[in-house]
Image 1: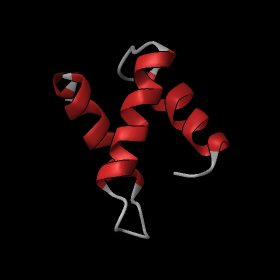
Image 2: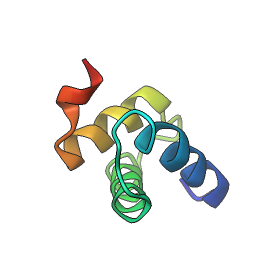
Image 3: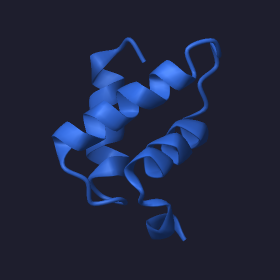
Image 4: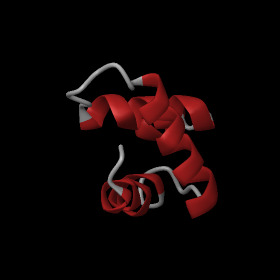
Amino acid sequence: MSDDAEIKRVVDGFCAKKLGLEAKAATAAVKAAGEKMKADRTKGRVTVYYLVAEATGTLGKLV
C-alpha cells in the first residue's frame, strides 16, 4: 500500500469500474483498507477489494 501506482491501479480498475466510485472517495477507502491490513505483509487483492466495498457501502454491487 505504499506504492502510489498500485493504489491508482485499484482505484481506476476496481473502484471505478466495479463499484462506480469517484477517485477521491475510492483512494481514501483503499488507504483505509491498507491501514486495517498494516500488520499483514501479504495483502491479498481480494481482501483489499472486500474492505473497500465494505467501507464504501457497496458490497451489494459485487454480487
